[in-house]
Image 1 (cartoon, rainbow, N blue to C red):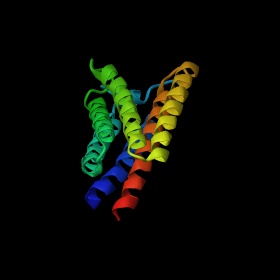
Image 2: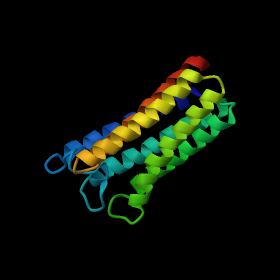
Image 3: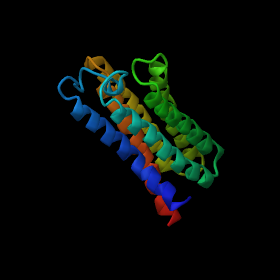
Image 4: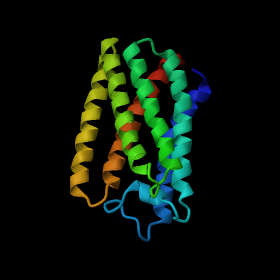
Length: 188
């Protein structure tokens, strides 16, 4: 794996969260985390919608570049399959930016991102379990379950879905950085 791929993996989630918080700040007069969706910040026709949409696309490109290097390091077929599914989730993340709220594919690509990225990291965790990386495998499974339980709880307790979406995004990010740190430690 190239150092540029590690840096890309590190920067990817930061770009997304800076984009989300910047878009939320720009739209603070009407946007509420408990009443809206994150996608409301990038909807068609909204001034400055590019702040969210470009950050999501950029994040996807950065992490896909990192994942290409990661894939080359993995030896276990199940872990590799999980990373491929995770990358598919990142493609859907880019599609959220390309098809913002107000376009017909938006709803589907949004759900597809959370489902495929989540199941991708779960499958990679199962692969880690089977290749002797038990702590990381169990961590992945517990994180997956915890993230989904909290997101479903939030969806039922808030008028909007932004809290549930952020729980999902933070869960994916925690897994991503945990794996990235393990990889960085092993290749130095």
